[in-house]
Image (tube, rainbow, N blue to C red; front, side, top):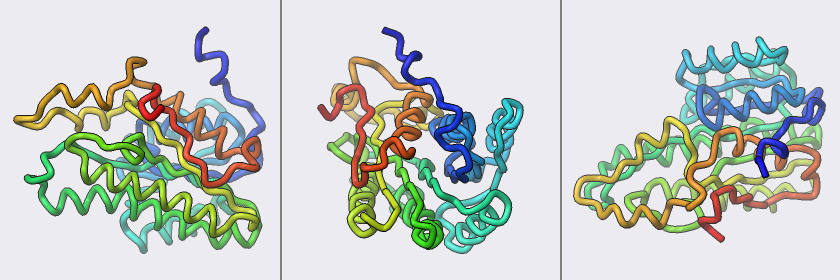
Length: 260
């Protein structure tokens, strides 16, 4: 059976909602922004890659959707706070946040530069925290909010040459659960989607490092191959919508059975 039949957007699922999507210039972020806009959301598209952001917004607007581009580095505390304020003024109070921005690279841990370790954790984990912290007051005041963090199968299992990436995504998983417990019953749900291999530009950063045993790749490669960004976006849209209204603290694996 073709997966296309159960990945179709619902035009009204996010009608009247303002959604914030980080990492929106390409890959899963772009697919998520496009998906939520197709389902009725006004989408704030955040990234540091301006050309990609422009293309994402143009794609949404040309299809009849509403989207605005914001240059935002999720590791910059002041920039995040300012951007969220701008979104509220231009599009309305954010009620959906999708933390998609992420980076990674393979590296022998014994040879990993400290600045690479710090950068991966800053974007993947600290950026997720800063974005969530900035939208939470408005969501809590309105008793209406859904946060979806993009984790990874690498946050649920060990992966070779990925100590920083695994640590950051494992942190995202537990950060998600901690927020879910803290805010359960207060109108804010917090969940995560954990993809496996996805056909995005990020994949090019994950090449076997010199001297690495390529056999180890079998541990992190599904026999189903890579997913598409659209398939991950469909999962994000579902768990972020009211259809998942009783779901919080969940980690939805979309990884071709890697963590089964």
